[in-house]
Image (cartoon, rainbow, N blue to C red):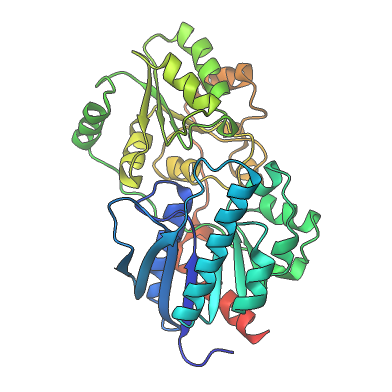
Length: 368
């Protein structure tokens, strides 16, 4: 058991200025944890980023950018080498900064958590999405951790179904700050910067430009929808990888009415969401997607992916029953014609409330 304030190491490959929901999650969590008296020091270990120093001051600690990148890695030996380098970096950081507890994002290496847990001491795994389920990855290593944070009900159910002990699974929602609405002048400036016509209504998408996010289905659905609504545009925001089939298709069809604006900062993504007539996320699977929550917090209409119990209970009429292009197009038509907007209880996502739950979990792990 640690003496005094907790010395915490958080290891995640995705941290600002990298875009994405995981980056927003860990950044907000670190900010809130840094304000807690029981937290003494926080070292965030993340991937190297071009143009950024390897080490910088962070909230009550450091941000250390030395983890290797797995982008574009192919072949078993190459992936194994990246995993080994990642494990070595986490072990070295835990020793260097005398970490009492390691909180690790499971996307770093789903196979190595058991080894890390044996060497570093208490280890909390944090599963933010359903990539492990989608890729049919074993979760045996998660079961060797002291605890596993599940961001949503479907993630918790997946872990339990794969044999992780129920007492190790802790359902802790993602923290969410209610976004500040932008002024009409700010939205107009954003449109100009992104090359979106100033008055045209648009359907928005924010996420990886990848097949798993339903981008191909959305493109086909928008083609059907736009035939009846030529005034509408489609704006896609998010990073793309060379060779990804969805990214290549977006590149092929981009033009006067389909705009790929690339990866945006979190603030600009919120502006894009606010300016949209409708946000659509037709992912094949999600945990609890931040973009949908933020769209609802900004009072926008949204079509959420299927299979997310929290959304299916809160706003079933705004959840896609499936991700077939014809279904997406029909629901776009219906939602845009309706006067209704989705409602959702954001109380469980209060950042201070989430930080309190995480701190209680840390304390329980240290006592065990």
